[in-house]
Length: 217
Image (cartoon, rainbow, N blue to C red; front, side, top):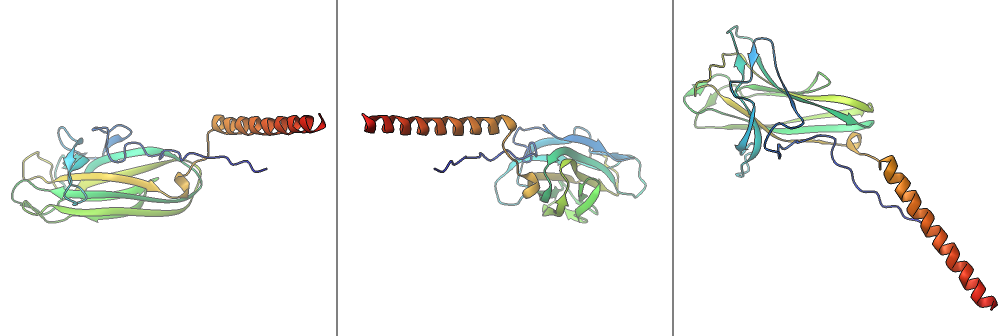
C-alpha cells in the first residue's frame, strides 16, 4: 500500500513585486540624506518598463538632491521577506525617461540585499527622444533562514527640481526565486494530510476485515 501526499506550492514571500495592486502595498519608501524621490512620488503608473511594447503597472520615481552638492542622493523602496535557507536570485526591470531636452544623469539604481550591493546600473546621459531600459539581477548562495531585506535605491548627483527636464525612473517585475523562496506545508496542512492518510488506512483495513468475514461465511 502506498500513500501519496500532494503538496500545494506556496505563494512567493515577496509581496506586490509587479505592483499589481496599483500602489506600493508591501513596500516601504525611504530617502537618503539630502535626497528626495520627487514631489508626489513614488507612485504606480502604467509604463513599458521591460521594453516589450506592453505597458504594465510600474513604480515611478523622480529622484535627486535637495541641495546641490554633486553627490548621488535620492531614495527608493524596500521590503522585508521571510526566507528559508538556500540559494536566491533577485531580478527587476528598470527604465529611465525624460520629457524634454537632455540630462547628464538618468539615474543610478542599486539592488541591495541586507545592505549588501548585488547589482547596479547607471543610466548616465539621457535624451528625451530615447527612453533607456535595463535589468538588475543579483544571486546569492547559502542564504540563512529568517527575515531579510530587499532594497532598491534610486539616486542622481543633481538637483530634483520637478521640472520636465528632470528624468523619471521606473521599476517593475521584481521577482525572487530559488530554494530560499520555497516553502513546506503549514503545520495545519501537515495535520490535514496526516488525517487524510489515517482515514484512508482505516478504510482499507475495514474493507479487508469485511472481505475476510464474507469468505468465512
